[in-house]
Length: 114
Image (cartoon, rainbow, N blue to C red; front, side):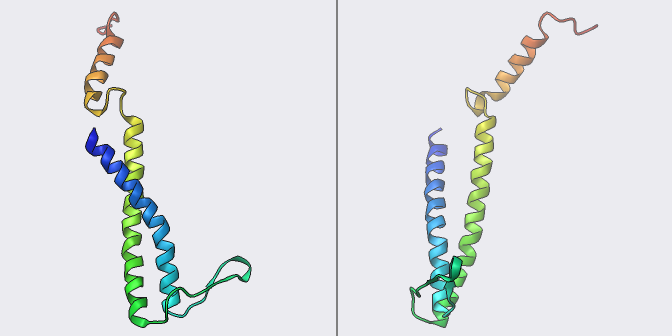
């Protein structure tokens, strides 16, 4: 259905925005608190924002709440993938009809009373 396709596209865009945005927000948050950002092997990233307690608090809150949004999107994405993988070929609306027809056909010709 069209609404599900739109939801899938929007959730993909949101996942990509958060996957790129969350590390940048974290880097900015650490820069605003004057903490060094150390990568592997002692490589330091430069500060991207000036030191500011209010900016650090704002970015910390944004990082905190976006993490929950990101986690919820990942859960919804996994649930949608599982639902899509289990859907019958005709779509979810035809599922009960196909299953009941398959049960009827599998019992046809067999003696159920025996």
